[in-house]
Amino acid sequence: MTHTIAVIPGDGIGTEVVPEGLRSVRRAAELFGIDLSFQEFDFASAAYWQQHGRMLPEDWFEVLQGFDAIYFGAVGWPDVVPDHVSLWESLLQFRRRFDQYVNLRPVRLLPGVPAPLAGRAPGDIDFLVVRENTEGEYSSIGGRIFEGTEREAVVQETVMTRTGTDRIVRFAFEQAQRRGNHLTSATKSNGISHTMPYWDERVAALGAEYPDVRVDKYHIDILTANFVLHPDWFDVVVASNLFGDILSDLGPACTGTIGVAPSGNINPTGAFPSLFEPVHGSAPDIAGRGIANPIGQIWAGAMMLDHLGHADASAAIVDAFERVLAEGTVRTPDLGGTATCSDLGQAVAEAIKAS
Ligand code: NAD
Ligand code: IPM
Ligand code: MN
Image (cartoon, rainbow, N blue to C red):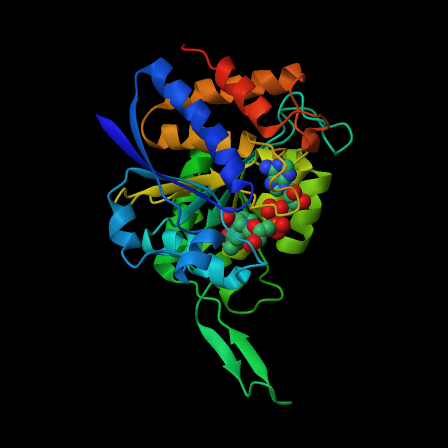
């Protein structure tokens, strides 16, 4: 069986790390006898916008929906297109229209990566952020009134549906059952008086169905502090769209760099393709210099293979980048080295072993 993969490099370092991710994915496929077919698209980028005046072709949904997965780099080039336009007209449409309601973001202190938190070693930081990915604070409901006057006002509504809340919370409980039977919920029900108490209510109600899972909750302010002070307290962390976004940059920062962090935008029903990308963005400050860390993109490729049913090939990629990082001879600048993006990409691809 051939798996079809749509490849969308996007902007900035997206175009630099995607080829490195593909190098490892292709190598693992070769070693494990997996048949993959790739088709690359130039949309969801500032260059496409400049040419066409839009981020995506009109028929993007029909074009992409038949693929088994989407392998995505990063989008956003604020000098050319305002970020809220480029993101709402590309990545956020993919997540919403393909109902990728789970955003899985593993956080792990990797061997050989200099840890910014004193005294922390691999094993101390190993948790999974389960981020709600289609509703919550990221809503299109709102607007601006009395524009340009003293009475100018702007409103943006947060939407939490019962279906949307329950399905992400359930997914997180199931992940907790596969890991350490411990779930942490990110809340802010002391200050946000409607949506967050509802979130807490659903976590508590569903928790009754998972009596083996220990549940705790923290308000988002102290939770961010505890990520830094006690990262070893966490195993699976479930959060709303915005809180999950923040936690999934903070977590990887606690492990040394956001350059290693992967992200799986999952539609668990399989009705539409899931999308795999690094957590980071297009990094205009380092784009074009060939120094981006490709590990986040490579790890996202491993998550994609796992999602496609190839846990062995996926594990072989993870094992390869762990060994390369532990050895420490090929490091990009964010890891304290001088290697290029492709030096590290090549070292990882060459280290992949058939099991
Ligand atoms: P960013 O993640 O692009 O960069 C933040 C910082 O981390 C920068 O200093 C950057 O150099 C560094 N960094 C990021 N990835 C790195 C890597 N692989 N190796 C080494 N260093 C790395 O976030 P930003 O600066 O807030 O956003 C830049 C653009 O990307 C904006 O347009 C933003 O909207 C967009 N963005 C897109 C995505 C996405 O496509 N999923 C995610 C985040 C931001
Ligand atoms: C991410 C990004 C996006 C998000 C932005 C670019 C809209 O930060 O994938 O984490 O907020 O989801
Ligand atoms: Mn983010």
